[in-house]
Length: 374
Image (cartoon, rainbow, N blue to C red; front, side, top):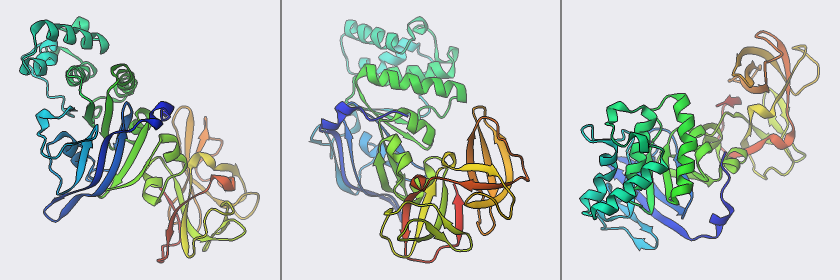
């Protein structure tokens, strides 16, 4: 996970979005969005399909006009500024390379359209191809390149015009897992070297966490939380964010003044004193890696929750354990280092430190009893 650069905190926002709303018929794609993006940062818009993130990207690029609200870049109001006159470039998910052109001609295309001097075009294209490591492939056509190389060509074509802001729409979705991991590092390196503000749209929370300095989580056209990856993971604000950013076990119950969460049919589960002064039902989230599992008799023994191992899956450096607990609708998820020491059907006891429980939602209405693993 990438921490927020300390130097960026004092910088004024490069992009300011205020009260932006966009409707398509009866569908509200963006609902009063407010957002600042700082100069020089790698920013991510994260959310499920249909949450509005691509619509917001298109508003920034100038391909969509908001029904209300303002968008400014470097203090300049972008309303009425056509897409081709904005200091913004958009790298499409499909890359959209010209198949009949060589790599260098693909990269030079935008500069040639601007009628820049040929010598300047050659110099800028050579420099950017060196930056993305494609100097040796300059004369090749797109069909002669790997998926990762084509992605680099698209990126080179986008940054060669030296935009103030580069927008990337699911830039790594077409790559296989190994190439995607490599290109995540490459994108971050290129962003730092180019000194351009990157704004990426993705539904992949691991991708957002590995790339971004800050992340905005969207759902149903609204921004629910903007934070650094570390803070977003440790202190999610709301049930949706807690479930969408990584796995979480969510328990519903009543907070006790002395500490703990009273879950009907289960008992009192650990929660810190002073976690909130909410009345009524609340939701508390506990990450799988914060839960300790030990073999125990199903009817007694040490631990806070007693259940039975439903499934164990090994993921190389860690194991994922699903535990069914009476009175809870969903299994409790546990992440253990290395191979698991328990097997399916084993009675276990689960425990966690009270400080690991995070209040994520207050709700006065009646919820279904129990925990929800997401």
